[in-house]
Length: 595
Image (cartoon, rainbow, N blue to C red; front, side, top):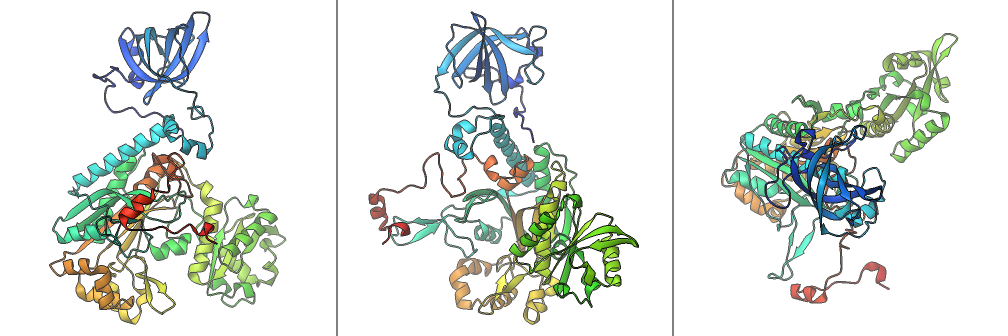
């Protein structure tokens, strides 16, 4: 997606300081007006002996300045230019430039700051190694694309805040120095100087704090919250991230989903993306059945098809599995034999026992399947498979047989890899995924594993199954997905002591352990906890998708590399031993230096 400079929604007049206009606000309508602009020299072009053309850039745009050759200017010098807005001579208009109809003449140029030659050109069309970009991030941020992305992110934040306030939410800041919490992710630890031997942690989310605010009667809380998790970095994950965090009392799951839908639609519109205000909904079971993932990309079809019934009495050993899922591959002509072999290896790499492929070809008696295994099919099996999959000549059917969840997952990943290019990059499909399982399985000790967190309310229809059939219990939790990316998740919380006790018991958490881990929250609930629920979604991910980027580093001013390093500042660094002494701590040598 091509980036364009964002101009603030005002006239462009800067009444104070060294300038009275932003460059991007100038046009032919200003011809004859004397203005003062400030910015960086983008390019210097000599024209004859006494004339120089200088392109000057600020965040809003670029303008051609006509100057005398006696002016000593180089790329990235910071300048003030006072001059007359003039229409360019006939034949010299630049249609690719927003200010291409004008130039500044009769100019006075003041060098405010000289500059050394930058390590790379400050131009979007010049490809620069990412390590170099991050090392000189302050220069990288001058580029139009980065200016666009970060200013667009600010507009997205503003739209989210406006949505929350319009819906009656109160912005409240929660602590950055917090107590260790049992949410699963690794936390950054902050040693205490005043309480040596004890630590704070940096919050991985404001989860418990915002539930306490519900007990405190604030009813509708929100925060654009900074959160930190000491986990491996990826394209969509940094140590530090920002999320819209909200919690509300006396609400249903639908209420929370409506609050969030309003916010993301408002954010989309702020980014210039057409949004109808409607967000789809699908159950977790249907998402897995149809798309093989709980993060479905719904911009393209090619849904998974259950073909278990077709081969219920098959003699083909590879098809004797609890569940058989099929996919009619997009672009079948691109699936050469070597590519199909690669897909088989890919399926095995994802944990499947294998993958069967069948190509529909014209035969003497009509359409038939061509495959290493098709000769073992009965005529009824071949016909039923064609009927169920609705194949045409040339189509390729891919089949994975395994346990239901494994078969769905493996074929769902292959669907994404083969079909993602089919999706319209300018289409934005939000969808709610609901009715997740309350428990995701059983650990080695036979204890149930919470799929979300232990304060997630079970679906009311499933209360009776908590003891008799806990793995079938659905939760009142919900995820928001955009184009195959999970933006965030939330749930209705347990506020009743009897239900909480049953869930703790199911998870193998004793009353004593619950008190040690969650005591201050459970104590607060004794004093009148309202029914409440909440949600949080990643603003980094949302902003990246809305500006057409796959990597959240492109919408973060100063991100870390994938190894967690800040190559600009050199962090993380060793600190003076006196600081460790002050904290009452000592540091072991890194393992690689130990004998």
